[in-house]
Length: 434
Picture (cartoon, rainbow, N blue to C red):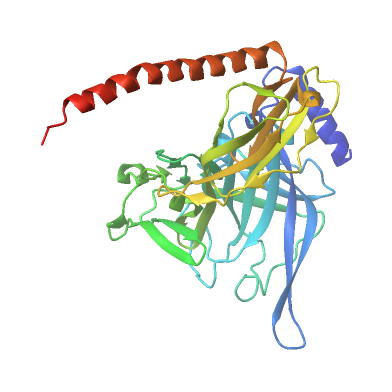
């Protein structure tokens, strides 16, 4: 039976039973083995070539038959650590499975778990959720029937045939449910990092680092063997036992909180880590300097300003458009728009203005003008608009405005004619004779 037919039959069976398609109920996963071939070039430097090979991760017991004998099978047998336990209802088509060889970087020691041997070889199996919900890295231990001469590392890998079945067990995993984080300013953020080991690790080291630009800062370090702890943000009670929570709680976020946070968990000779990318994003507050309606007379002018305030990061896109009120035509982008320089505030956010001088004509009456602001923190651009009404100078509105202004001037003239003589008489009365 071909491998593709096995997949189809398995998916049909899962679809027929409610809830069975969840990955915890399946006994296999299609994977990709990324094999490495290292050689020395003419200058004596090591060069690595990567070969992508079809593989199957099969869950079962030692002695089980490979579901597909025509492909590489990693038969994952019983262990206290089961990667499927940490996949919350994910479906097969939502997962990306990748297996790599793992080098202990010269550390030769026997894993303290049951059945381990000094000549064991290692693999990592990484499961990524297609929507970025989690990343799980599991360490697979394999005991070869024939030990590889010398040290089993990237210069001396044992070859794997296209139909080989490798018996493995999961001895440790490290996972994060926050591989990419987007957070606003002045927030408290938790960066998730969890681990599991098949025994109570007496030599456990947990560390958090922040990498940004050329900086590399150690935020937290704990070694269970010495009991030494440097830094804060991780609850020490969560690091005890074979299953631990090494999540980091950040202080109030600032623009300087951006960067790559690296959670590392090591139990010699294994070293697992996950990069968590933190983006600080603050949405712009968009406003206009006028109300939702603007009335002008023919030939009048008005400066119209669109302000995007207190956003982060810097990149923002601001445009002005106009369109008929009936929406019959596509919006027309205005080309007479000017921009202010970016203003940098003390909290690290920015502001920008886009403005133009509106020359009102009767043909413009009834048009709607809108400012559109796009920013990486926004799912959809923000629009702020106003409707323009233009009247003739001799219209009733203009005439009423002229009457009001003329009336005001007339009243002021009358007041001055009445009060000025009285002020003059009072001044004369106060004058002293000599």
